[in-house]
Image 1 (cartoon, rainbow, N blue to C red):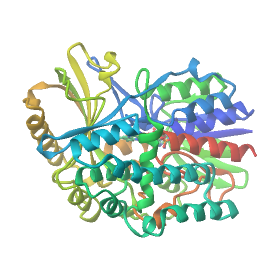
Image 2 (cartoon, rainbow, N blue to C red; image 1 turned 135 degrees about the horizontal axis):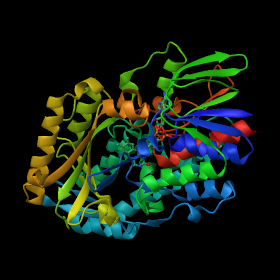
Image 3 (cartoon, rainbow, N blue to C red; image 1 turned 90 degrees about the vertical axis):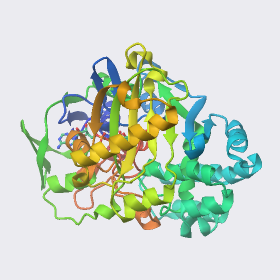
Image 4 (tube, rainbow, N blue to C red; image 1 turned 90 degrees about the horizontal axis):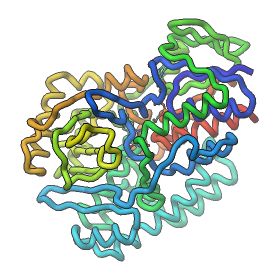
Length: 480
Ligand SMILES: Cc1cc2nc3c(=O)[nH]c(=O)nc-3n(C[C@H](O)[C@H](O)[C@H](O)COP(=O)(O)OP(=O)(O)OC[C@H]3O[C@@H](n4cnc5c(N)ncnc54)[C@H](O)[C@@H]3O)c2cc1C
């Protein structure tokens, strides 16, 4: 049976690999000239940047995919665990380090942020248990209200109590930690789903377990090597790719789905869409209501080539805004670009020296903004750039603007153009309420049994590991 996959992102390629290994004829149609989508790469002026993701977690899921396709993952990509995970900077020049070892992290919090080690370790114990239950129940297939789901949910609530549902992550963390700086660190995990810690339910604290217990990893060559590994796996399993082929319309019929692209037409018996869920609905000509309020955050990213080396900075760095609550109120309540955003800097050349010319560093500088492309005018970009430069210049005690010798910018608009992300939302819909979490879009179309969805905008969620999982789970369903 021939299966057409639209999009060579993480979800599309993982789904295609499993299908091809199980004997299906798979063709991937990709609008760009290369694979990877959000997990693509920029190579210019001696600099190499990962376009989107910079943090790799749960790489063993990628290994498992290769093993399940009869291949040794080591023949495709290699990675190592980071001992130093993230450096967090606060106003008043304070900083602290999150490490691979939770005990060490708790010691750092005690030494630099004045939170008793036992308080943090006690707080964290609960989330480790809860994550263990969730991983088995919610990530392996579609969420179904069956016996297993209810059993796990019961054990879950017994551990966390009602407060983890009715209270927000931020409110819960404030009551348990009572330390503004550590609260900021823990609240930030809500942004991994493009949500607000002041809205998302407290049980989402379990997201921290992925990074703080299971660990953060760095693939040799940077994150793009994950995309390259999946691409090579697909090729070895016989998946056919056509690049520069943009799908412009989809039509349901009794035999399957008719796919029209800028180059050709196909009758797919089964169609897997790795494009954003809402964009797929538009291609099908379906009338659907989309509430921008329900979407995840978007971003402005500056890819900066920097003359010089900064020993104070690590691979992952966060410069927190002073008023984190105001920042999220501006993003989600006022739908504005935050006036004083938190700044994330990733510098892959710290570990991969080939990513920057000698004596230079490649800075990926990102802030969270609402998914509203029309907000991001040239004026606003200049305002954000000036804010970041002045803020970092003060904190790093340099004239940053004189050190930037390369720049490219990602906006919601360019993210939409390059990857099809609706309104530039990074992860489809946000998880700002229990209702939003429970109604995340399924991997199966409600109307057509021949249409499937994979990738970061559908179940189980955004980010490399979950997009990969969506592809694998969906392929297994199609095979069965
Ligand atoms: C700035 C940023 C930072 C991020 N940081 C992290 C991080 O640190 N860690 C992490 O795990 N995740 C991170 N993510 C999320 C992660 O990148 C994504 O969740 C993951 O890569 C999504 O993959 P996907 O399967 O949804 O496919 P996508 O990457 O969305 O790919 C979809 C593909 O479909 C193609 N396509 C779209 N429309 C058409 C069409 N009409 N015809 C043909 N082809 C089409 C696109 O060109 C693209 O190649 C980040 C994302 C961004 C943007």
